[in-house]
Image (cartoon, one colour):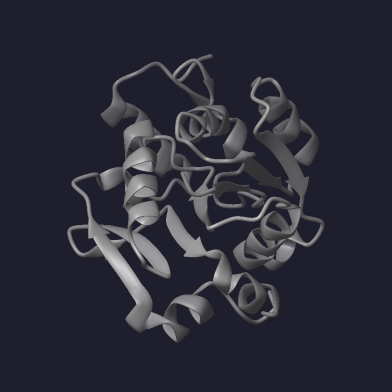
Length: 206
């Protein structure tokens, strides 16, 4: 199988949540741990969790998961936003790769099967960029071919974003429609968290 790595972005400040959201409870463990474990069920060559704010606690949660493919990368420029974390994650990759999956650490409701399905589709396709959608709304995770890495790393995170990549290669994007609402769900505020935990039907306590 062609080698595809996974980046899990977990560096944000969680300002609207009021606490480090990656460490919040989710089905008996931390929210981020749940995402990491689901991603690891896929055949990714390696998985890099990019940390920033609350990095020490976040890395501790990740290191509690035993898998030789898993490691952390600290983004010292995390305050510049998501693009800086993607760049940090790309630079942390070492093996020659076909591409990378960019997943968000605050989407715990995405099932492992969805990551696996998207990975299989990406590997078997010739898409430069693969983006899942739910009812015509694009979501995450997204997949990028390694041919885009140089262009991505040349962007300025203070003014640019991943949109520069997707808009610049719009004709090479393949969108795959999924009946999975979790790919478009944001988890930014206490209200978002409460709504999602009620929908999933579990006790928030660890």
